[in-house]
Image 1 (cartoon, one colour):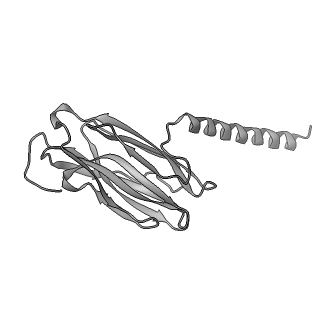
Image 2 (tube, helix red, strand yellow):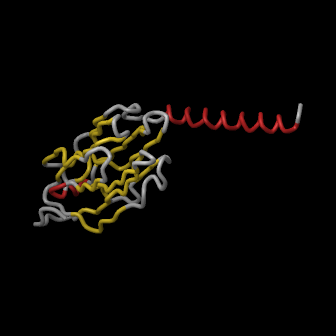
Image 3 (cartoon, helix red, strand yellow):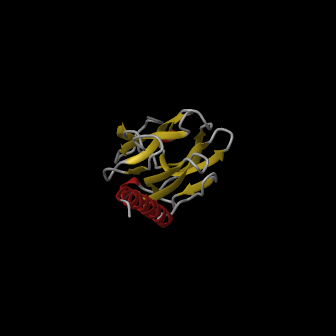
Length: 194
């Protein structure tokens, strides 16, 4: 066999194997949606989001599959006294949302819009007594580059997701996220929202 053909055949086999591996890994994840489908994900009562993963596909409507993980809040935070769906963004637009009333993100819902190849988003927020956020920070862009896989795992125990800032590329038809992470006070405070 011609050496050039052999090299080409081996590189094609490697590409197919890598795609099969990626596809196989994709099936192992607990995605909450299919491409172009809406979803509504809520953590069990008393739990908040601690991990978010997404996988982009240009051929499936420039959309992402999403997976979320929850964890119970520390005992000192107490039980949530109220939960609600906070403000909503419009597909194709930039968006910044922080849970009102010092809430923590305990769920996400999203609807896909074929006309703009994007989603609208809304956070499910829960209020814990009169605890206040402090030491807040924003993550770097997730994913680092448009159209890559995205993953956020809370970097340190005691931090909580309070919201996000997201930008949309009309050219690449994808979003990057900066999640807003905060610690919460161990005592009641008088501030309505920070």
